Length: 212
Image (cartoon, rainbow, N blue to C red; front, side):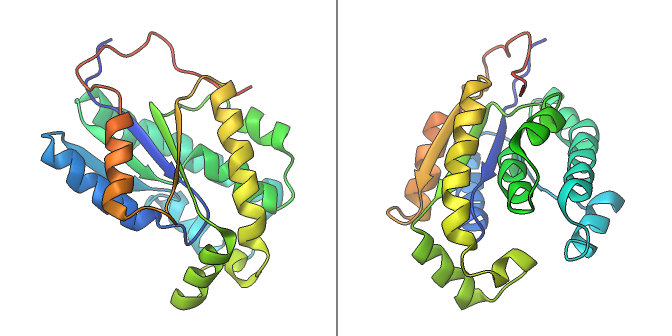
């Protein structure tokens, strides 16, 4: 089936500049005449709101399963319909975040790979990175918004885990772009991502990569 739209995920440590990058990317793609839909995980669905409201209390395998369930619902009810209609979807957090955040909660990588395996993979997985010290400074400046932000060692652990997530995605056949936001402006980051996005006029491959 021909699908003109493309699916882009943006992941990276808290404080790395995902929101700023997504705004700049939306502007860049729109300038190119591409219809863009922005979304986020956890979603705004009842399940997504439950996860956000109980993030401080639900942890480990239970949280990983809730996040996965929200993702499958996200794909079925929001992402797939937009792609089928020819739109390009950008999501703030997706599989790479699961492979990092839930590992910070003690969930083993093989379990997360199996849990995530059947879900739709992005056409381009963008992983933003920066020096852990810079990330910690940004979080301190804006204030903590979740329990991980209260751990000063979290940025130093997240950055290498995202490197592992990038390798896992590449192994699954997912195109991955890693961009350092500490050495580039948001416009430069958006331009790099935009240049790596597959041509929306091409035909999608017959099957999507899966994690295993």
